[in-house]
Length: 256
Length: 245
View 1 (cartoon, chains in turn brown, cyan):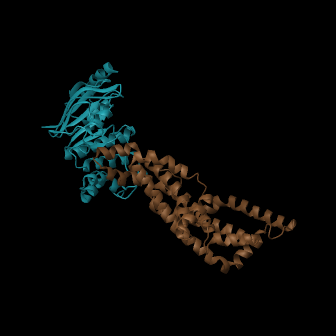
View 2: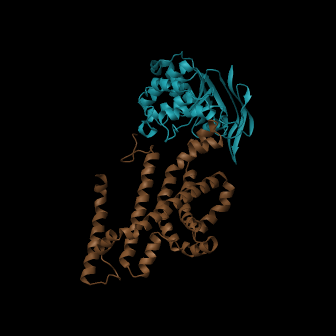
């Protein structure tokens, strides 16, 4: 009900967009290999299921594995840098720089170094994933209320207690913001890593489709990637709802 | 018997001298209020007793033991309730004991009941009103194992009605518990109504300006708030503070 209430506007825009697309394709008789119409894409999506579903499962598996490793690395790096401020000063700028290395260029290099196995693929996804998580987590730690940390210190809490009882839970909402961004990136990362040379995966399906001018399949792949990203995002959001229970629901306001 | 003894402590932050040769003492089971103009270093005083910083000179001792720069010796309630938002009422109340490694579930539940918060044990702080949050913070203080309770303007954020109600509640709990309490406030009436002794601080650099022993008998009755004697005392302390300000 609520989703329908808020969601009908973007849905309407989307439908309008598809209608314009469909009508233009038919009106100007655009050839299928140049730009397929939405109905052709949907048809291919439905009929070609047996063609691509093993690609889909491969990508889902790779994305989950890569995301889990990337997220763990991201959180671990953030915790490490938070607990060792000197290290943080030294490493933080380099972490930001690492994000300026274009993944597309780096990917073939990784293949040269690590071969065609799963390792270079995981490295690509990790590189894409860890940054938003590390930055968001560090921010969360930094924002810990000084009043609460004064209280904890005066009560005699040790460094470990302050971390586990105060800083970690305080940062959880920020960590989830990072996870949400990374979850959508990880699908992109998986597809890019599959371009490097994989046996199956949406990335492979996409490359095959575009080299054989099956533009409709390229679009099927695009929509699959979008849907996958959305599903992962939703999963993280529901996980957040389950874990971060102390936030007021609804209008976002407490009682006073 | 002396609970807390502060001898000639001074503290500067850079150029800014906050405390200058401040000395005071709190006895066992005594309720002492610290009154002073705003910005007179009251909070700094608490942070020194709490061990967040060390004084530049002088000594702070609790039960005869020196606690300069040592955290964990007092039970402190800051100005705002400072509850952890991800912990329930019960979880927050147990926090003080948890830090030193001893929690008493049954006692906590009993105190919650006594504070009129029954049914809210598993509520999160955002679900509570201002007065209720403050009450939770007090119970947390009372259930912390430390023997000296320091309250930093705990009633300043409450409205008049809630404040009086909370003061009465605090008094009734304290009458049973009889732990030493140090209360920082800038409300003369509150200091008079609650405490055994009032210590007036000077402006910066702060030292003890004057001390008053409050003569009203315990348990305190709310009716004294309107008595002639109470008003006279209020005038006396007000004049003392006016000289400073």
